Every structure is written in structure tokens, then in C-alpha cells.
Length: 203
Image (cartoon, rainbow, N blue to C red):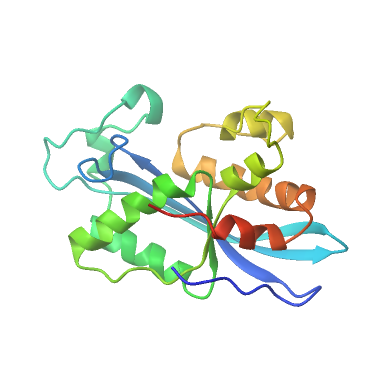
């Protein structure tokens, strides 16, 4: 991960919002089941940030062995049968990293997703990503230092009237996060809030 340089006033900033669905919470032993990315271009005018979606991509990830656990199916809805249509982990992570080249990687609870991606890169012999990163969870929390509100993605979407259909599907969550990004950045004073969020540790 490298440091982030902010664009000049009025210049666009290209970002990719990512989300993963996994078989559990431990990046050392659990597996990535689904990867999604939504490409957006951010522009700031007088502290107000707008976003234009320019692309999206999602894939299921094939299990390394047919009997590998898939975790809480009642949450993510992903079955072993569905994962048979997925691509290999190495291909999925390599494609995500290709999409991140020259862009800021954004996620809601970035530490969680990034830990799984780092573990996958190490497991598959892939190089570490050099993409600068930012976390919408950290930005949202910075706006509520007293922690009086929930900062879960679903609750933030409800608070800001953002549709979240099929929650815990990686592409649905990435789309919702992408819609949330300009709202939070505008509340936080502009694109500079990304730099603050990017200073958070990722492990």
C-alpha cells in the first residue's frame, strides 16, 4: 500500500470500491467466496463530492476442495454448487489487483477485506498491491466521535436512503458503498477525508 496524493481542486479522482464475501472472519484460515468491484470517479467542487460509476465486476471464487466449508450460508446465500461456477482464487485476486492499478481502493471495513486479500496474495504467490486505500467505516466513525450511531453498512444505507438490495452479496454491498462514498466525503469536508482514512492501519 502506498500513500495517497490528492488531485488538484476540480480534478477527478478514480477509485474502485471493493467488497468480499468470505466463509468466516479469520483471514488466516477462512476463504474468499465472492469478489466484487465498482469503479467510480470522484469530483469535488467547494467541498461537495459527486461520484460517477464507470464500471463494475464480480465473480464467485471456486473452492480449493469440494468439501471446504462455506460458512454462514444463511447470511451470504452462497452454496458449494454455486461456487462450482466460480474462477480460481488466483485469477480472482489478480483481476481485482489489475482493476486497482492507478486507483484508490475503498471498502467498508477495509481492514477486514484487505486482510483476506493479503492472505490470498501470499497463498497464491501474488505481489502485494500498491494501491492506496481508504475506509468508509473510518470516515463514518470520524463524523460521529461519540459513537452515538451505528456505522454498519446497512444502517448507513437506511440513514441516507441508499437502496441495499440483496445485502451480503458482494456486488450489492460494493454498489451501496460506492453510493455512500460521496455522501460521507461531502459531510467530512471533501476528498481530503480519504487521505485521513487511508492513514488507518490495514492489519
